[in-house]
Length: 154
Image (tube, rainbow, N blue to C red; front, side, top):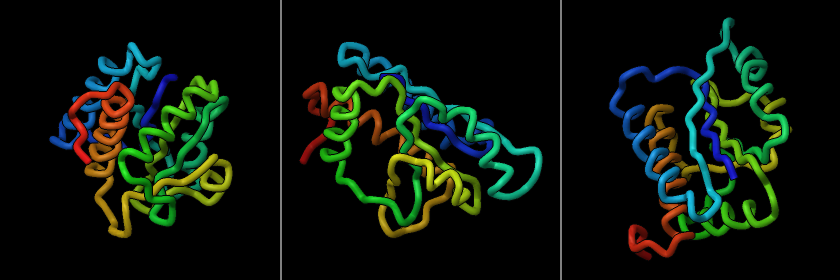
């Protein structure tokens, strides 16, 4: 199952961007034997400001995918439950899993309503650059949990 972290905005050479890429690479390498991956990070930018314009550039990347939108009002999952959910999606035959991280103002309601589900990183608000790194790390952690690796400790 291919996993895409689809994000609004480009981070360039920020340390958080490199951290996210590192975790995505680790998840890709560790997930091969589990039919999880590759894990990629796709950054998009809208030509106009606003959530509606961002929705237009996100929408083409969602077709045929199981979509989980990161949103402050989404479901909070502990790491092990998150891993089990990713494994269940794979086992149910989903070929593509897309996680969405919106721009500074979040995701457009039209995108949120088409997502299969929403995910929150807790009640706090996180900078988008850090949210990307955190999501990439959780995907890597999920892969290691599914593989039975000692990376995750309960």
